[in-house]
Length: 144
Image 1 (cartoon, one colour):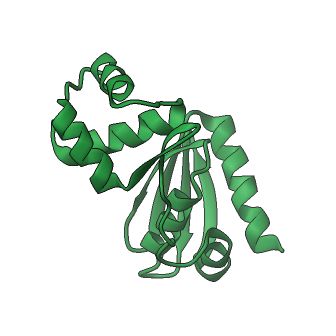
Image 2: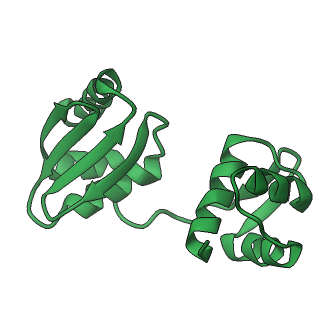
């Protein structure tokens, strides 16, 4: 298990449930087959910028780099088509990564992940209906 993967799993755990102690976090990770020592978790918590709140560990959000989702969609999106559980987005050349990053930062729960090329983005969703719903939601930005 590499550090980046472990960090990603830590963030998934704290976003999905309340975790108040490093022991709880270690148990949650162990349930996923990831064993981490207390020393490793302490370092990970510091590197991820996690803070303890009354609701459990939370990540302090830094200012998002790049345009917001609405601005990126209005500026760069040229087409949106559904293909099974994927939404295929077309952008102006060299702008797919900006729109994909804005989508990732928006953290829409119906989006599993994005892959960006030069002018094309694949947006993975759970199923066809969800892909259609995400397409409609995204197109509302460009129709305004």
